[in-house]
Length: 317
Image 1: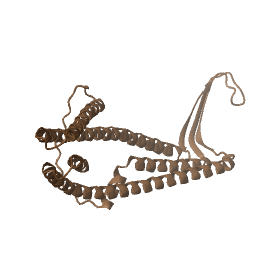
Image 2: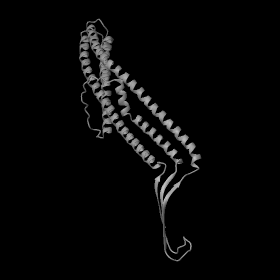
Image 3: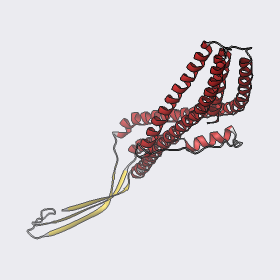
Image 4: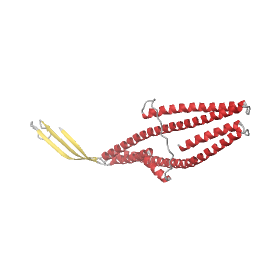
């Protein structure tokens, strides 16, 4: 006794299932690319943190050297009886704060280096020395071009897009439940005695039957209505979610674009502020040593100059 059934038509369910598996595979590949991209982003972020700390260390070291020279001049004035001891103490305290800041920056460098080494898979003792970056003029890219790039490379957008397509296929699959199933059917008998056909006899016999077999589930006409409605609601939900993802990308790109143009202006202003702070510090220093300004004015001018130099470096990064 042997039989076989070869599916000819099953409401296109097999093709729909194959397409669903293809979409699920695409989603997995997108998620994999997203994970890789997240690692790259973290590595770049740590690299920039390290670069920023190294730039700060260079600035604070230069400033400490300047403050030490200034302290010697103030100590000389004190020895000559021109200024009070309090001026010397204030200057020494201010220098001490800078040296403590340098220690903090040194520790920031060690921490950022270890984090970067871990994420790129090298030993903790590896010394990473970022290259000096030159500030290049920004390319003339419009908001629409940035938006187009965002849609092209957004992982959330493409995942949402594939999930919407998956819901469409599931709706088609549910609708296919009310379609008939057709297949090629065959059955073969080989037995002894022969009791399949009348009159019976004790001889061996064989019998083969081949034909088309069609079936249809009448109950699916009733039960499939609710399933179809549920699948439609699921599709609408995915379409709305996809639209929300699209709107969120547009909003994020718009905000980032405005902040970017704002940062470009801040870079220009920061450079102006640095030159103004240098001139202000020079003037206050001259007036202090000519006994026409206070030590607090001098220290404030020095701090303001250091702060504007820090801000300028941050804006350029």
